[in-house]
Structure formats: structure tokens, C-alpha cells
Length: 264
Image (cartoon, rainbow, N blue to C red; front, side):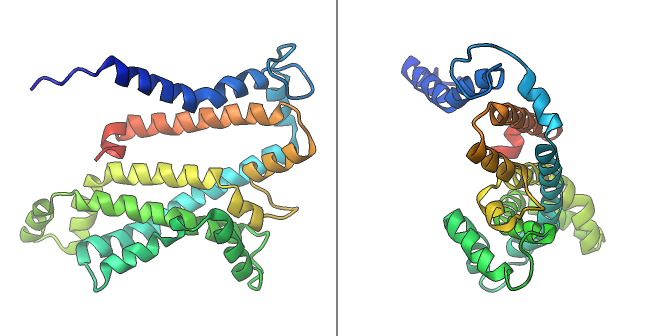
């Protein structure tokens, strides 16, 4: 069956939309290469000094380490918690499964600042403010809904007869899960890990409520830096974060394929 040709109007509209989405990069990249001591567009001179300044800034490097470790821990916990929850909702179908699914995704419906204030009020008496454990718990509240939703979708699209065939041949439930179900969910697992990592690494509002003077994530450190100084350092960090995001997308594409991972 031949595919219908795409109209020139639709191509032009898509091109304008991509240009609109990429417009910030058109500004940020030249500013990151500026030799000026303040943000200006276009720059009056060109230099890589601000990329070197990133690694000499101990606050930024420490904040990057915290964000990276935090995102990795949150991603691992989101998979460990979200996978059993998704399996129970999709395969076991307990009473009120639809209500539970809606409850698990409820944090995504709240404005982030409202959610951050609620977490602040709950975590303050528990002594979790300004701690790594508190940051992990706060980020899990945001990443778990994504993990459960994506993994539930991945489970719902799997062919059940394959699992039933394995069970009929004598495989116990755990063997069926680890040797049949889990391998078929590879694309869903990869997409969940990528999404949770990027959401946690980029989260700034919840982190503002949870961090303190001794513990800060990279987005919070960038926010505080902009409040105090208007140099191109943040622009250089932003470019590196875009590169990091592209690297995650490339890894997803190489391991599972973007079409299989994000298109259902």
C-alpha cells in the first residue's frame, strides 16, 4: 500500500513548529560561546572560557554529581517499584484497579509548586528537608506515575498467549515473568528508565523546596546562580544539558529503537 504524499503546507507548518521549539537553542548556543562577562546577544567576542569555568566552579560540579547520582537512584527505584505495581494492575486486575491507576497518576495533575509545598509540610516534621533521602522520596512522587503508566502500557500490549504457552509447558510464574514477560518488555523498560532519569535530573521546583545550603541539585544551583550573576555560565551548562539529553535519546535508539520505545 503506497503512502499518501505529505502536502507542502503540512511540511511548512512542521518546519515552523520545529523552528519555534528550537528557537531557544539559537540564542543559548551563541551566548555560551561568548567572551563577554555578561549575557548579551549577539556576543561582542567569542570564547570557550565559560565551558572551562564550569569545571572550575566547585558548586556546579558538586551539584552535577548530586543530580546525576539522584537521577540514577530515582530511576532504579522507579523501575523496582513501578514494575510490580504495573504488573499487579494489568495482569492481576485487583478490585478497583482503575481507581488505583488513577490514584497513582494523581501527582501529575497537581501544579508542581502545590505538590512541592505539600511535600515540604509533610517532610519537615520528619527531618527530611535538606537530605538526600528526602530528595529521592520527593522525586519518586513525580517519576513513579510516569513509570507505572509506561510500564502498564507496555504490559497491556504484550501477547498473553506467549506467557500462557510457557505456563502450559510447566514454567512456574516467576520463570514466566523473568524469561518471557520481562524480555518482551525491554523497550518499555528502556523508555521508562530514560523518562524517569530525565524528569528527575531536570526537576527544579520540588528540589527548591527540598534542598538546603549543604545539598543542591544542578537545576537549583543554576537558578541561584542566575539570581546572583548574569554571566554566560548558565548558558554553557544549558548546552551541555542538551547534549546529555541527546546522548540519552541516542542510547534509547541504539538499545531499543525510538519507534518501538515511544510509539505504540
